[in-house]
Amino acid sequence: MLEYEREFESKGYKLIAGMDEAGRGPLAGPVVCACVIMPLEEDKIIDGVNDSKKLSAKKRDELYDKIISTAIAYKICEVDHITIDKINILEATKQGMNNCVKQLSVNPDIVLVDAVKGLNNGVECFPIIKGDAKSYSIAAASILAKVYRDRLMEELDAKYPEYNFKKHKGYGTKEHIEALKKYGKCPIHRDTFIKNFVEGN
Image (cartoon, rainbow, N blue to C red; front, side, top):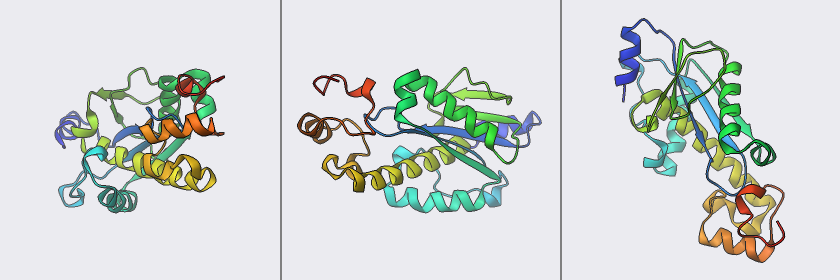
């Protein structure tokens, strides 16, 4: 998981950030981006950091706290459903990622990014396909983004209980689509994502 980090360190890069997002696919809620600069000394590497999709919710929660307490700097940014509908999910993701880098309290020398190209934030960005499974720094960012968004959707579940957001986090499960057909959309649904499921949308 440290192959890319060690390669860039050998080229003279000192502060290496990782960046990822959570929530590009759901029918509701924001996309959440996270950027984190982790210390890369061997004795400070957090055991168990991996692609967030490969970890249990309990393990992600544990690692989330460890990452935040260990990080040199981190930033988590949301881009809401209204912006997603207006500029599309890819551009919304780029906006969130650019905001993360610009708002970091420490400027990284390079940002390793999970797959997304064409970022413009004043820092060199290096996209890696399936980076959350290949880079320690990106994996750490993926955990921050995923846990933050999951917690947000659990809070929104209390506001809109009929959709059961706490279970599916806004993704297009059978249960979610059936709720959409029964109740129509709620204020956090993405119109451009649900147009095939809701009449008159």
